[in-house]
Length: 381
Image (tube, rainbow, N blue to C red; front, side):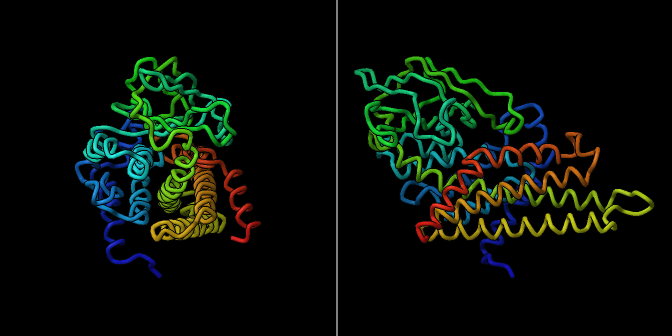
């Protein structure tokens, strides 16, 4: 049974065709190997108008739904989750500007973003605050010149690319309680006294993840997003969209991992027959596909609820938990099926596996998702 409308089916197929004809697996592999940001395809995506999808019509966008956006994320991750990350991280902050930005901020940032001229990134974590994001220590003080920032941020995806504006969580009231006194500032990555270093991580090689050092960096007063000392509210809302998007992307990458493993199993001859004919391989692939299908349904449920403004923090965390662990599991099984060939970059499976290992950590660990789910269960939700 197909739960998608004809229009949604058509959109999903459009994205998959784009990935096959305009991008290709070799391009994604090359960006990963060289640790190069996918500028060429980012430009093509902008020219296709896809960056306009979630921006409301009255702000110059297409006013699409979160469900349609999830379908796009699923398709864009076909040849690797990291590739889709380049587009997803920009969208998260763009939507924060839609929701919390002043008219001047929307005018300044949204149209250039939709044209692909600027990108966005989100910076929450620090060396001492990962899952415990509210323990932010980076300080921002209001001065006559603007907000002066001092501190260090970590694991900021895409911040080292060209023309990036970083939505940065900072502490603006050190005397306030833990979740209070936090604000979000828009910090261009070209700002003086901002040192951004791309990290040599195992996964997320092309989009890149970074550490950022701020030594009295100053941004204008009008770069405050939303209300001062209310930044935690922005971050909480941001995480719901982020987790739906990444969950859909995990499913897209996991499906390709299964398809690649299935193709190899039919082609690889051992003991005078394709290894697919051995029951142990058949059953492994059957379990892999079953798990991916289940993950897809969980993602679609969360995306549909969010599209219809139905509270869904539990469902979003379930989707993120299950989809990330599915990507990790099926890529590990894919490595086993491909055997020695899986260790070669040209097999693609080792890239999928690396990104699967990151999936259960980035965007909220599996342990954090279980905390959210169990808390909702205790509350009777």
